[in-house]
Amino acid sequence: MTEAAHDTHEAGHFALRTYLIGFVVSVVLTAVPFWIAMQGVIENTAVAMAVIVALAVVQIIVHTIAFLHVNTRVQGGWTLVAYVFTAVLVLIIIAGSVWIMTHLNLNMMPGVPAGSMSEMP
Image 1 (cartoon, helix red, strand yellow):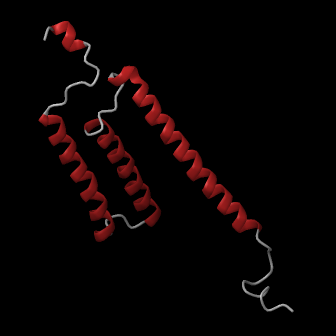
Image 2 (cartoon, one colour):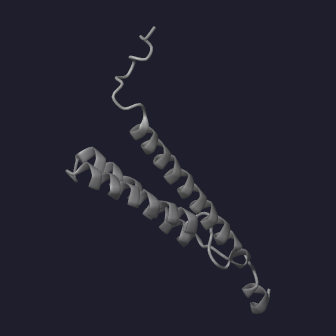
């Protein structure tokens, strides 16, 4: 195989080194949140949850690069575009669901105790 033909290969070559680095980083990104949650290293629950979610997002990125091989070179970048589009849709759905549930909770018949409607004649 010539060097020119080698450069046009779209899938890219990932060595065992890439998989091992991805594995080690994934193990660390899994162990640290367990350590935070089990040992109570961070006292503030909101901060602990934010750190755990941030580490989860980093782990998603590591898996995407190291194991799924999504980057700008594969298929002219269209795989990355599709991946980002999917992530944006998921974020919109989650944010919209939380927004709807919050507003439904705030606007549910104020002043009426729960369960009192079923006792009415």
